[in-house]
Length: 257
Image (tube, rainbow, N blue to C red):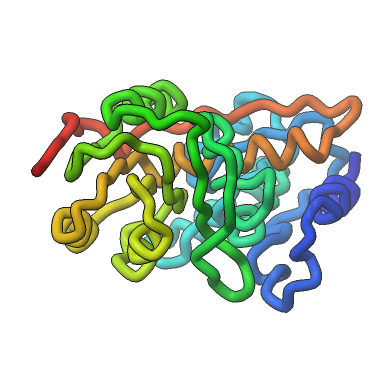
């Protein structure tokens, strides 16, 4: 398939494609002009991802994030490698956070939550959600389920003893206390995200809000996979490009009271 055919099929999935910010939050960053018979997907566009894609014989890399322009010359280096290896690249950011097959919804499904509502609006996209378990779970059980799904150690702060029924998910960079405030507004038992800083933990402790933090990369990978599964591409192979769990290396499980 041609890159433009693949992108058209992906974009047709999105109810938000008429949003004025859709084009700046998704699109092709490099089109090698070649037919695509193998798609590789990952959360991030990095040098390692591109090198792995070349070894896999991938013709199109699909990611959640574009290469970050604020990390030195990463963007320029990635674009040069894509051109050299004749690999195309497409990314989808905020629209995928919002979608019912996207980052938050796919992770919620993976850990057994039913989506109740979407929250955390940004530029017309809802970047988080509220979900509920059919039956309340112990905090330790939720932590175990998250680690099994993410295939990595999470950081976890148990700050109250209530069973976990209602969960606020914001995949990726959900470290802002303004985002976390939705957990309190929605009477959630736990906040699940992919990043935290000092203020995130202090806010959780102050408000006795149970907190589970995976990695930015692997909380969001489910959405990229879900998007490609929903689109479907006959005759085109679709494979994950493996990324390292660099964000959680050295973490030990944490708790507080």
